[in-house]
Every structure is written in C-alpha cells, then in structure tokens.
Image (cartoon, rainbow, N blue to C red; front, side, top):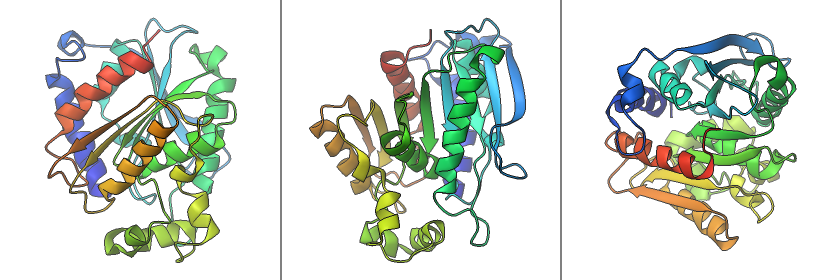
Length: 288
C-alpha cells in the first residue's frame, strides 16, 4: 500500500495537468493561489499524529465545501504531506476547500484499531467547530481515501458518522472486509492486518468491527464511487464488487469502476480515475 500511495500521488500530480474531459485545463495555466493553514492540531495525540492542513480558495465563504483526503500506507506509513500540491491548486481553483490529515500510525504494537477512527471523529469535530473561524461549510464533507485511507473513510462513514456529515466517498482500492479468510492469508496483507487489529483470527469480532461492508444499510450509506484493479494482488477485486452489490441492493447511488489487468498500484489508469472522479464530484458534491 505504501508503494501504491507514492505512485498514486506522483502520477496524480501529472494527470491533473492533462485531464480535460471533466475539469477545465484553464486553472493549470495560471498561478492558482489559495489560503493555507498548516499543522493545525485537531486531537490529543502526541507528535504529528493529530495534525491537519487546511487549504481554502481565495474567495472562500461559509458555503465552501470541504474534501478531506485520508492517505494510504497500510495504516503504518504516509502522512498529510503526501498530497500533491498540484491537486490542491486544482481543487481550490474549482472552489473546493481541501483538508489533508495525519492519523495515528501503527508503531510496534501501538496505535492499533480503532484509534484511527477516533482520529477521524476528532478531525470532523474540529472542522465543524472551527468553520466560522476559517470560513467554510463545516456541516458536510466528502472523503477521498486511497487504500488504507479508503478503508478508514468507508468504515467511518457507514458506522460512525452519526451526524451524517459525510456526503460522498471516493474509494480507491480500499479494503472492505477484514474477515475475508483469503485476504488474511495473503502474505502481503495478512501480517499487517493482524498488527492493525491485534488478532490473527479472521472470525474475531474485532475483524467484523473493522469491516465497512457489515455496516452498510439504507440509512448509513452515502453516494460512493469505487475504483479497483481486477488484478489487484493485495486487495482482491471481489471486495469492491461485494461492497458495490450491497450498495446497489439498498438503492444507494454508487459507481464501480473496474480496470482489467490493473494491480493495486493502478499505474496505467490514473488519468481515467481522475477524470471519473471529477465527474462524480460535479454530480454528487458540486462546489458551492
């Protein structure tokens, strides 16, 4: 997942310059400016674990909608600083505010699940409480997650978002079912999941507690778009398919984008992902 994150971020910055189908190229031809508020402390964790960066369009207002980026990295690596600056230019030029946040990472048996969910709760509470001070809409958010960050975004929304603040999720190759025996037996994933949950048994209650697919119903789900490679060697594409099937069964607006021969890193398809991501946002979460 860490390699995926690095690949995604570096190529995503490039495709931001190239995409013209869903988003105008005009913002990239100017020196886009935005207001930034860096290293804001949103929770009680020590060190860098509970810091976030907030980027707002110059002409932001109480109607400015936020997109919250949750990074990948197997719940062990990555940070808010991985988000490409070019994408910040793009989003703010389109009128969105952007949040990129750190959450507590696995460290030698510490910071196991569900501390990352506590961090997302605290981040959303902070963003709501400080909306008037910084100038944006603090009542609703979109979540954009990659891999482990997509897992956290899905789980937080379907299970923990009691205030129904999350209006849409963009899931890029996120795990959805940590009770999946085949997933847990995958050498590349199993050991990290065991560390994350603190339990090696896929039938353990904590594995179900950490699996977004068990918490979807017509009341908890929100419009969700899923991107997944059909040859993903880390998170089997069946996880995305099952999540999509369940979303559809409850009549939830959802979209599943599958990519033949793509692995977990999705190297060949990021331009297409970016274009469809932009169309999705315009449809379900337009900038105000």
